[in-house]
Length: 176
Image 1 (cartoon, rainbow, N blue to C red):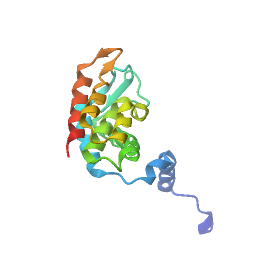
Image 2: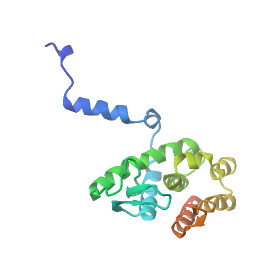
Image 3: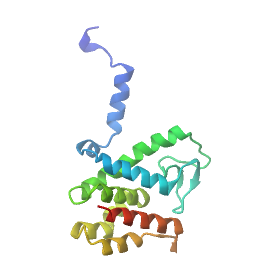
């Protein structure tokens, strides 16, 4: 067999598989590492880590630090798996947030919005009045705080944990 006819090694196959799984838009933006580290700290604090699947206040099966993809009742993971899921999940939210506000927001603001999106979903952020207000007047902290605080409900009831999270996000958003 010539060099050109050799089959790819197992390592090459794994790399190709990973490349095929990575969303194309994620590769096109440089990660704001300061925002990432700040977001990681805030999200971990707000989410906590549970190694056994549970239903969140939104009714979704969840595990680790708020991981929801392919989670099923009775599922258990290790702390190492929770960290691996979270490392992947954080990028899924940070990158779109950066695309939306990276030119007008500082690292703290990007981190606050990443935490928000991690909780309500990236589409929730994109459709929100919060994002609209930020894009129009990114330093209107009074209105932005009001918009954060509109997102404290589940099934029409104020959830204390969501209220605390939104206060933390709004406080972080206001930090220079």
